[in-house]
Length: 287
Ligand SMILES: [Fe+2]
Image (cartoon, rainbow, N blue to C red; front, side, top):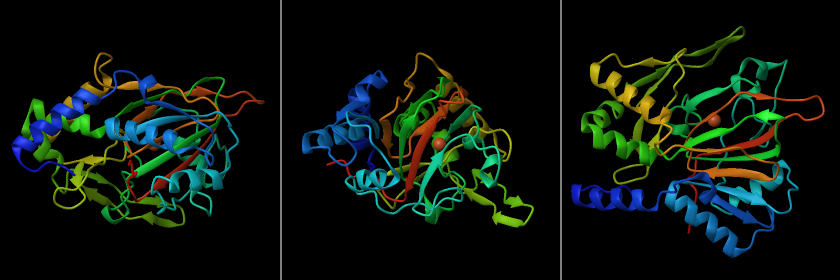
């Protein structure tokens, strides 16, 4: 629950900073396998989620398929899948370099770098992506590292710097994604919404963000611009709260849709990067 009173907020803020990991290694939890984890391993993942809204699991048994991803996620209350445009029928996407078909036009299906974002920032409010599981089946030859940051830490740093930043980011027209129009017509209408919102009064914080320069229309006012600049600097600060991790085969992230980016990567013919990704409308049940 998000604290309502100023006193509760100060306490919550202090705890968030106290418990937040200094490096990504603190997020890593060894588990037997996606469908064979025991209760102490599950509790260890829950602990990382409570500290940072994310955990990195590392399977001793790396066998994984899309059904295993779904059953792993379900153990954390993640059952309502976002059936994304490029996902398979079961709602789990296979992220791999695609040279043809409808996926080829999207950066996640290329080897290019991905700028900072939360997943599904172009979804309307009724389809908020609250949690994501990203599982590495095969890593690339080089590159493909993620940077990660808990949105609650971003919120705190923004509010510390200027409470006006929060008001600007809570404005319902703060960030607009123009309609997605393909040759065959409109795939998705334009979507406007805030960067920060809550699941009802006192509910969990949700962040919707993309650092992309193209295809994003920001509300044109000085406070929004200043808030964006502050956030960009925070995300670029090598001495700040951002952590870095490169997933190896059998490892994955489970998170409450944290901020992330990805460096460019290089595949070889015999080693092509493959990740499974599942997005959920639920938040991770961490206890
Ligand atoms: Fe993403």
